[in-house]
Image (tube, rainbow, N blue to C red; front, side):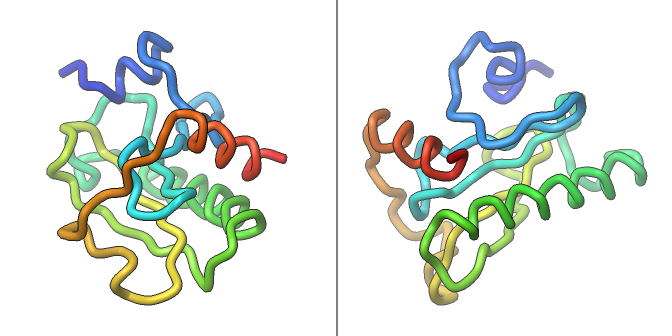
Length: 128
C-alpha cells in the first residue's frame, strides 16, 4: 500500500521534518491551512488510524503532543488545532494546525500556496 507518505518516510521524497523517532514522523504539510501545519504519521503503513494497534495508536498521540508543544512554542497562535480526516492519503495521519479561531482549521478552505523557501524557513523556526 505504498503512499506518498511511505516515500517521505523512505527519503524518496524530501520533506521538512519537525520531529522523527523510530516509529513516527512529523513534517510540514506542503499545502498548509496555516504556516506550521504539520502532519504526524506512523512509519508502519496503516491506512486507517482506528486500525492501528492500541499501543501504537496511544504512542502516536503522545508523539503528536510533543510536536504540538514544539510548534506552539515557535509559531504565534492561540492553539494547535487537531484533526484526523483520513481521506486524503491512505496512510494514517494527524493534522496539527496553528489556529487563532475555529475557521482556521476548515479543510474546505483554500490551502495556502507556500514556496519551498518559506516552508524551509518555517521548519527551521520550529526546530530552532
